[in-house]
Image (cartoon, rainbow, N blue to C red; front, side):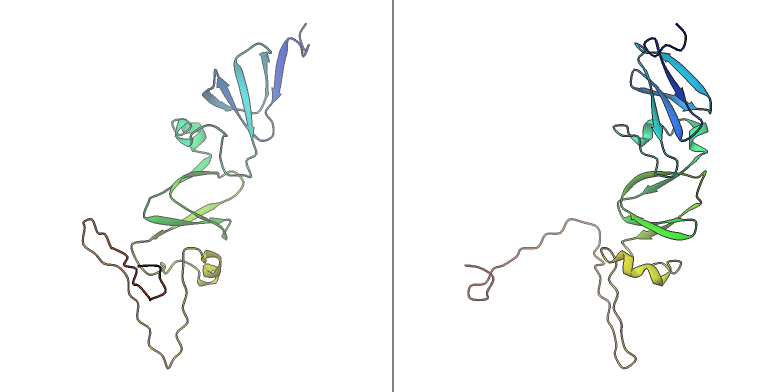
Length: 177
């Protein structure tokens, strides 16, 4: 009955990346080749295109980072709570990454990352000014003419907890008071 689809499942792993799972737990990356499992087997194979970011639906990235063979094929970047990271693919700006952990296949494209600390008011010098318009949600740009002077104000509070009360003044157009 060999080759009968009623008896076995077969996977050819010569294209995109494939991962073996047993009872829902990650086992390993499958090398190119053909793999056969009985149809009643609790083994499954997940196929991921290597041109996309590394994301296995329903699985946390941390589950895969113990596999050194896999990690060699990935560029992993951690974005801290106080950062944004500019992600470049083959020298071209690709996206802005918000806090979290991300992984990208490094077998097709070269990835580079520039960390921007939101606690510092200036955009780092290594950021190409031509992409600032693509960062409108997190970067404000102001043009100051040669006959003008600009002032930059930003919060430099010491450590601690702060609260502000919002006062609604009667007749000031802010509400009923």
